[in-house]
Figure 1 (tube, rainbow, N blue to C red):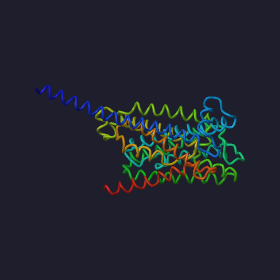
Figure 2: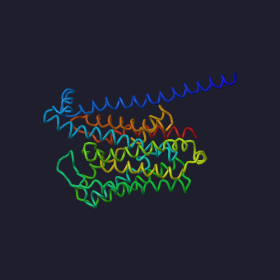
Figure 3: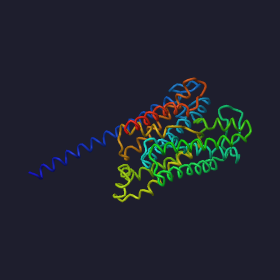
Figure 4: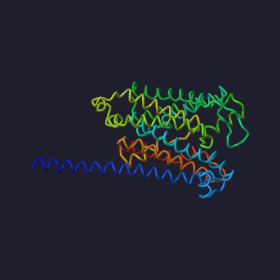
Amino acid sequence: MNHEKTTVNGNGRTVMYNKYTLRKRGVVIMLFILIIIASIFAINAGSTNLNVFQVIQAFMGNGTEVSDVVIWQIRLPRVLAAIIAGAGLSVAGCIMQNNLRNPLASPSTLGISNAAAFGANLAIIVFGTGSIQSTGTDAVIINNPYLVTVSAFVWAMIGTVIILMLGRFRGFSPEAMVLAGVALSSLFSAGTILIQYFAQDIQIAAAVFWTFGDLGRASWREVAILASVIFLAIVYFILRRWDYNALDSGEETAKSLGVHVENVRMGGMFISSLITAVAVSFLGIIGFIGLIGPQIIRRIVGVDYRFLIPASALTGSLLLLVSDTLARSVVSPVVLPVGAITSFFGAPLFLYLLVRGYKKK
């Protein structure tokens, strides 16, 4: 009798667990479908009017010269850059929030984006890796994206190490670490201003334009580099999903389960900084995707990192893709900086999370 009752209870738990995982998988599938739909709208959006039939013809190799150039050289790389960069920045924010146990942590709020931007500006202006054009759409071309990426990555890592040292050795609270990130952001912004102060006028204009955040400057080469780095980073995070689940329960709990907390934390921050550095060096500053992506989807799928990591990636892709489509459509043919659109979305949520955190005290 007891054996039968145990079997029934076990089957009941299995059914509940299957429903639990099925719902979360359904959310991931739904996000993937929404990205496909948003991509179709994004490819059709723009100053050059193209209908769905022309887009299909271009994909089949039967398009006109104009449609081929618009779709293959302008819109498709832009759409792919939005999907890839959005996924990377959102996952980076998700992992940072886990590693620092701080819901406000992200590349933008911790000053890492500005640190990477400082390194990129240093490479473009001081080391001369950027060439200036007279057109408004591509004010600066990165001749050596690898040097810019390395410079941005080094400075992003410097910002990361400072945050980790403050949190570990000074015992900073989550709110204090965010404030430390704001201070670092101001410091690196000041450094960027000083570099631009000694540059020529046209270099200043180009550097400022570059920091706005523009997905239109991504060519197939940048898309390929972004895709390679971010794909490998997400694979790494997924392989560490159980460690992040343990770490989310507390440092002591994770250690009792055999997790090397310091290694996991440093590895996660290292890879997250690499994602931020690559994205910023190619696309400029795109703020708050790393904050709002994980925060939105965490309220839907919970804190199980088996599902939270891929769901965060897809949410970030969808948010950046929709933001870029709005940037190109609101006052068409003028293209607004996508970083401004994402900041409009992210800043109110940041304030909400900050206020809610204080109300809990």
